[in-house]
Picture 1 (tube, rainbow, N blue to C red):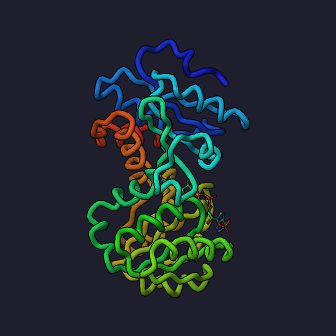
Picture 2: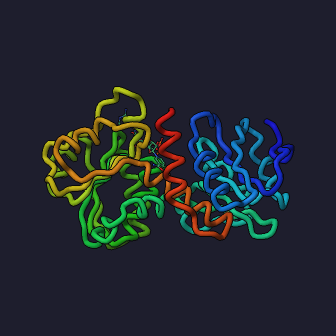
Length: 287
Ligand code: NDP
């Protein structure tokens, strides 16, 4: 690991800690924003070897370091080394953003709110709605918490492993007592989708080119909106939504907005969304 403090560039640094980091689009997005706002800041990927997380977080107490994003596989690993963890991140059991108050390192998660912001005008329609969440991993949990906090009336969780779906139901129900939560197998969910206002695909199926969709939308209404958290390509899930002329979104908006929220934590400034979106899309096109 090269010390980020060894950077010859002036100004402040923000890190992204993970392993591996080759594919990350965040440096392009944040560095474009820093340049646009004429901040002498640099966003530096730090590919951290296992066992070095604590040492890197100690380095972050240096005033030159203003914060970090944390990605796979360290979103949980960082927790014991932080001075404070915000309630949302505590509930999720994971942190994607570290910001500083003086030397203190504070962990938070911007995934849930980033997802909600990505919905744009659809966000207003969440209150009282019914939907289907496909997946029960880390991203699904963040999305489930955000949806439940937006007044959704009922959600069905469908996941390959029903044990994980039941675990998510349990933690979600504890926090949102009035939310009606159902767990279904993926095949059953294909029927349930006919009663849904929205369906969110939050599994990693579709990350690989040629992946089939985890469930068919053949019973979905034309008014049901579909979101896939994957942003790398049009997934089979979203292709089917397009063919059925359903309103739909990919994960670019969530990636953008979770990043913009992190940026606001670090800099205290409103993030330049247009600039960040352009940088994201440019880099996505070249991957
Ligand atoms: P996790 O590893 O925590 O969860 C993976 C999920 O995918 C689980 O529900 C798992 O089911 C399911 N899954 C994996 N393989 C299969 C398969 N072959 N068939 C059916 N289900 C499968 O990953 P995350 O929750 O962190 O990420 C999920 C996706 O969300 C990723 O594609 C990631 O890129 C995307 N994401 C996008 C973000 C954005 O900003 N747009 C932010 C964060 C994530 P099981 O429990 O049965 O293993």
